[in-house]
Amino acid sequence: MSEVVTTHYEMVGGAVGVRTLVDRFYDLMETEPEAVNVRALHAKSLKVSRDKLEMYLTGWLGGPPVYVEKFGHPRLRMRHFPFAIGKRERDEWLWCMERAIAEHGMPDALKKELGAKLRVVADHMRNQES
Image 1 (tube, rainbow, N blue to C red):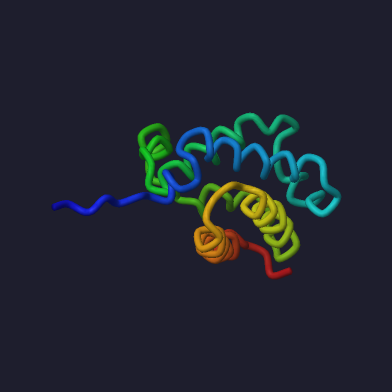
Image 2 (image 1 turned 120 degrees about the vertical axis):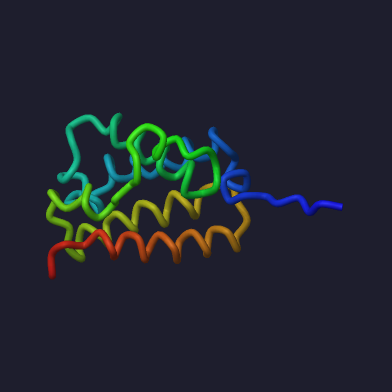
């Protein structure tokens, strides 16, 4: 008898869940003063950023590899290198993501796991000392 494996993608609600998480993340970034510096790194419209993060998270969470199919390997650090990302920008990004995750309907254990993994990713994006 085969074991049923549930992916993180399924646990966050599939395509609709990922988009909801991404939209909440960017809504916080766009409206909250705690994210003013990281928001300034983005284009005036966040549509492209929303779409790319949705595609990336879809595959990262175990769903279809839509980002890789469209853009190739994520090369996250390389793609973020043109932007000055220091501790402040990292922390503001995490502030938004942690709140979006906390508000999202998913198991608490998954919230904790995703939060820990995304902290590592966010720190890896830093290219400035301060």
